[in-house]
Amino acid sequence: MHSTPTVCLTMPCHDPEGRLYRQFEAHLPTLLDVFDAVTAHAKDITHAGMVDLLIDAGVEVRREPDRRDANGIPLIGAVRRSCLQLALETGASWVLYCDSDRALHWAEHYPDELAEVATQIRAYDFTVIGRTERAFTSHPRIQRDTEAIINHVYGLLSGTTWDITAATRGLSRPAAEAILAQHTDDTFGVDATWPLFI
Image 1 (cartoon, one colour):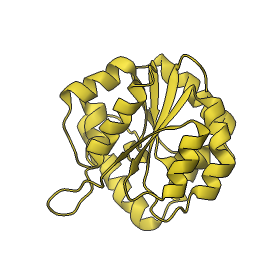
Image 2 (cartoon, one colour):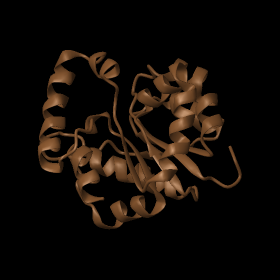
Image 3 (cartoon, helix red, strand yellow):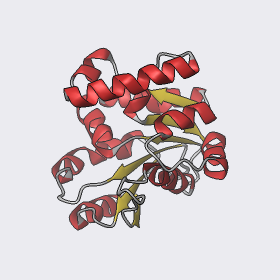
Image 4 (cartoon, helix red, strand yellow):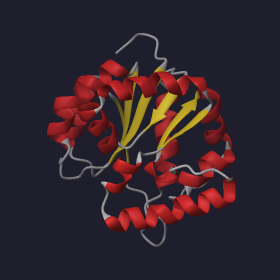
């Protein structure tokens, strides 16, 4: 890791069974090479060996309980804000928020593109990183159908045709600080409400 973090990758890591362990073991060095700092939000049910692997590699890990609303739905907005807070604590000027499985896939298959994205997010306060048509169609149909509706409704509201459901975001420090200070959406709706808020 670099001494003065400029771009920090922050990711939620929900993996009770350690299914991503081997992929982290193989591709965490790429993530650590591309980013000045890497942080992870791990629920307390995340596989202990996975957490140890991350910490031993130099990833700053925050462990928190698995928080859900009264209906048992995960409070993903709260988790994402916790990820942002942890990233800012590294001193980073820019943050790339990305789910851990997506970050690992990127590092494994498209490391040059990942490095380019880490550079390009510095051009804006807030960057929505979507998927190509090929990548979008590689997901299960139930996910594609649902996310296509969400993206369509977002487009009607915002006038853009973005893929907001990939949940990968580039944020400047001021944008991340604004979300932490003023945005309280705890739901999955943050896919849409973060870009609308910014």
